[in-house]
Length: 246
Image (cartoon, rainbow, N blue to C red; front, side, top):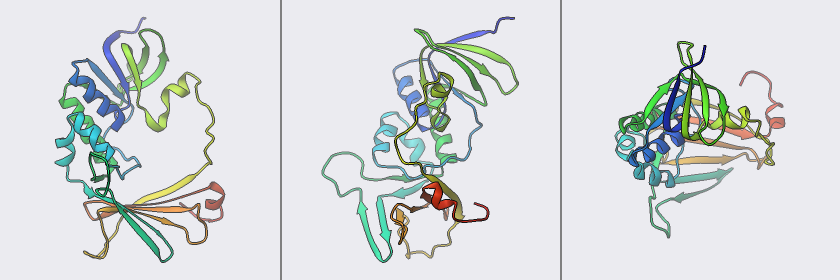
């Protein structure tokens, strides 16, 4: 039995920030856009402290109001610390035009806001639709499985892989190559930080270097709801020295 086949102008794999912003840009050009997302939003993801350049793309894509009205934590810079040494940078103190402020975001909410914004602009958004196979070519085609288990095909004029950590096309088309960057691991969590008002600048991410190991660093990212993201980045060999659970 042959599978039913759909067509679209542009098919985007992944409804994260890259996929949703790309979809919004394409809708401004009048393209038919289908976004396929394996998970159901909102869902947890890491990568929560934006840079001001992000705002340029969000604004140009027509999604600025969606982001502003979501009430995320305002961000104007970064603080760096090691031992008793501290310095900070204000992104507004710059020599080029453009945004000097941005936000620190819970990605579950932020990604959902952008995806729904792209949908509002006319993109078709399908959650829990998993891409199983990819057939590249002049008109690429993918096999998809719906949450009900039905399999179908989508043929598009253009295919954009915005799957992020999943690296869908590199995996399915055997394009992955080893990175020449040093291997790093990260442990992270969200905490209710209980920081007293006025004792801490919640408008900045804090990057702290380990006092004895310069290649080990920590992030502290405050959110607007009194919570924060806390994480540590280090080589796996450093992490392995500590026993117990994450």
